[in-house]
Amino acid sequence: MERMEEKRKSNNSRIIIGLIFLAVGGFLFADRFNIIPFNWNHYIFTWQSLLIGIGLISLAKNESRATGSVLIAIGGFFLAAKIFGFHYPIRHFFWPTVFVGLGLLLIFQRGGNSHKNRLGRFDKGEIDMDIIDDIAIFGGSEQKITSKNFKGGKVSNIFGGSTFDMMDAELAPGRNVLDMFCLFGGSKIIVPAGWSIKIEVTSIFGGYSDKRRIAPKGGIEVDRELVIKGVVIFGGGEIKGY
Image (tube, rainbow, N blue to C red):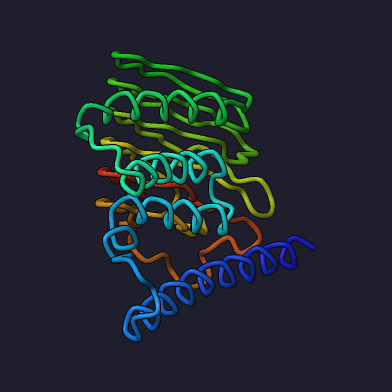
């Protein structure tokens, strides 16, 4: 049942992405044949449209509905301003938009068994919860996860960073999702060598990488998996194992 649900979500993602490419290709053909009477490429091939596209892909991949919705809202606002001739400098609205977007993300992403907010400070501690919910803003943390039935959770790093040591933890059976959001920040996850990990992160001027050594053949836990999802913007993350 779980694999069927994952396959359905994957098919939906391909359909949405395919429709986006078809729409762009259709606009290009229409432009070549002079069917469209206005210079639409000044609106389509812009950073505003890029944000909308990334938001749609994020929603299609079911990574983070809150993040995808905020990206679409920000891109749509500035694209509408461009189309309707709202000529105020964008820099005047950049930071207000950022703070509104961050506020919406924090509201809609709230949840989990262990919820911690860090604003402008660095914390170090131990978490024995199956689901984590960690937010670091202008600060950071080093957390040791000791749960023997870890199911994932949510992590948000905004102008901050966090490190999660899971060497003494164990994954719950099946598929466990950790939703990451990094904006001008990053995270590091330290895991045992035998963990099966899949990275499904949307990166914008950033990245998320698995830097573990290749585990010995037969040493991977095939019945337990940790899936890293989410969005990384001007930030990054890495997975390490010792």
